Length: 210
Image: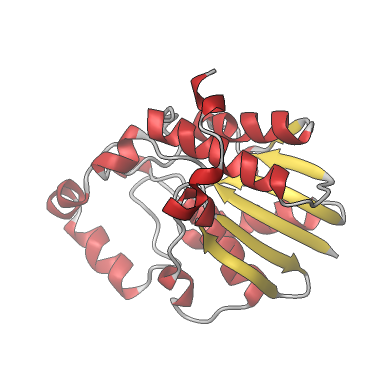
């Protein structure tokens, strides 16, 4: 059995602005770095033993993985297969700019959000093929996977066998935790951000200042 703890990367400036990131290598914002330390503390305090730590090689994921690696004494394995969807010409654009510049794409993705490719980029179906290959290559055990929202939604669809556009209905916030059992097809939690909420203020903020 593979118990997979998917962690979405911390907030970036482009997340705040609403810009499509794709493979563009955007850094974490100060808030995103804070979130990375919060999720690391949550994992360390969970009492669970983790067999491995995998991360997208884009820096917003790698920088989120860094405090997790330090807290759990794990060596990250960086894998480009769990990069965000390649957004092609949409990278760096705001939603209103995309609507103005690519009306045909907007119409197509509303009709078929899974198979429609971003202009000069990937579709969710394309993304899911590399995510599936990654999942199949993982050894058994409890693994942490630091990645991106699109990858986690693709994993939800693949692992849970979701139909139609159900995969779009999940909120996968920055630094959230989604726990799935593969290949059993069981969700233990989705989009958990309890460690970022007000009740979690018992967690130390001092480490974020280091």
